[in-house]
Length: 50
Image 1 (cartoon, rainbow, N blue to C red):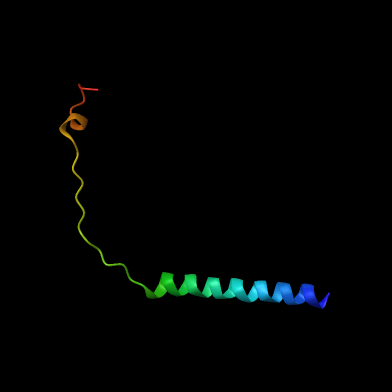
Image 2: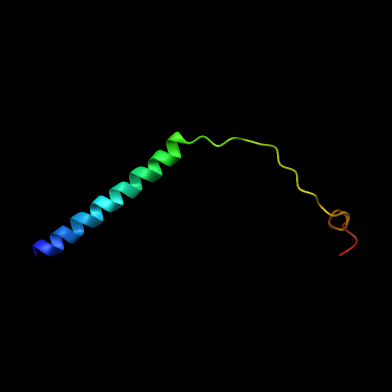
């Protein structure tokens, strides 16, 4: 039983570290907004040509 408890404790610590890393990335990192343009072919804009 001590081995199973040690295994679950290790999993809980690893899960806590992963959660802390995800939380830190979500709150501390700010994405830089940038302009984006997508070229649409003319054939997609004309409703009659399908």
